[in-house]
Image (cartoon, rainbow, N blue to C red; front, top):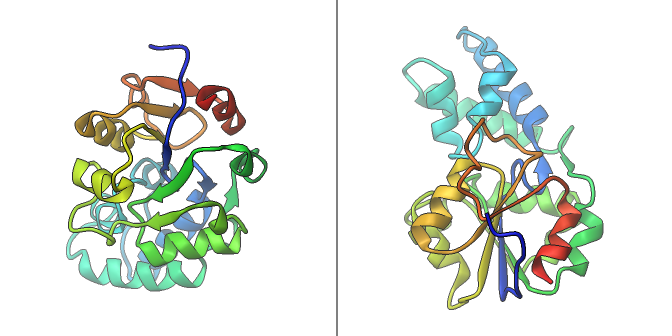
Length: 207
């Protein structure tokens, strides 16, 4: 693993598990919906482990078919309880304005939800653009989503907490920094170029 970084033109951030700890609201909403629909209520740990590949994949991995009624109810319920317990990770608000490269968010959460979360938490204006899983024809880990999100930028650093981000960065041919405080499963960040334990450590990395 490399231990030092140069300057980057653009930082491409994941959202859930990287900038914000959204698991409490996601878990509460999905468990509430499963109970309401008479489905098996999945333990919180299994739900958290499924965060990162989009709402449909989350529902498919935590409920039995048919999935559509669960997905529809979950999107409605979660949209109504989006930022009740969701918080920025320590150091995010303070560090973002100190990071000189352009900053973009690419989440697999629907774009409107991703934007609303960051607006409510007061940091949306720190990003040049905020994209979600429905912003482009493909989503992470398809590298096409990365290419669409970064435009013509060449010196890019991906910052994320999961194997989805590492895989997408690898397929796009760009370096990736894994954050160890997020929702990753064991081994998911092993192929990352860099690892940080605190968000503010990005300052040293981009300098």
